Image (tube, rainbow, N blue to C red):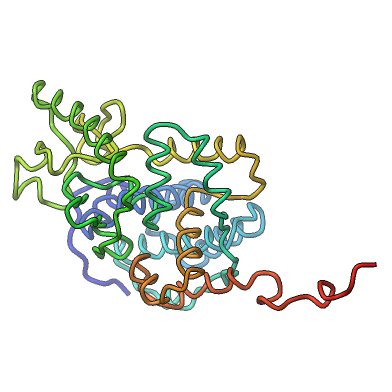
Length: 330
């Protein structure tokens, strides 16, 4: 069964996939992931034409991922989502197998959290804007991409507030601006303004704008209000428009710096930058803040997602004291 979909102008199948993703306003990260998995699927089947494949071919590919590649359940689900999007939204088919295909069961893992002492040791090792950015993630609970995509206009010093634009699920929210970070953020904005001013003098294209705002407000992309708080130190080519302009700090750059800091600080935990967000939530709950307040600050759609941090607080037998600790010393 074929479903009516808007016509695509692209000829190549992967270009059609990109066109449909952009038409539906999916993020660049989703685009990269879906293109990767659809390309891998087509190559797995020896470049067989996509219109001749269906449920059997998808099952074979997913079985190979799980059985031979031993991918995690979350990776398996991402690959399946990419293929279902490809068949449903690009090829316009709605076969029964698309609803019946089995989804892997995701295991629930406790998040890796860092103690305040461990966070302080990591911050001591990090330098410059990497240190400030790590402080911001720990101090606000933002996701790494939310922090990287901060614009100048979103830091409201007068209200001690940071506005997170289009977080997960496309929702805006407000988080606190830690007072200890005000001097560092003001200095960071001075550094960013030097780059912005150089762009103005050179007549370059400014920064990327969300959705179609660059057409609605043609000059906004070159304005100071829309400039990045954490810009990359060199220009780069926008992957969608091909325009040479400032991009925000790359997440891979910060992740590598964080990994080095973890090693130098001697912390033997499989922590990532996202652990700073986990640590933020754990510390607030430990301090007695209401779980609904923490849910709002984290931007969770469901309080059940926030509840995972209550389990972290009970690590070590759900807070029960071991009888071994009650024995007299011998």
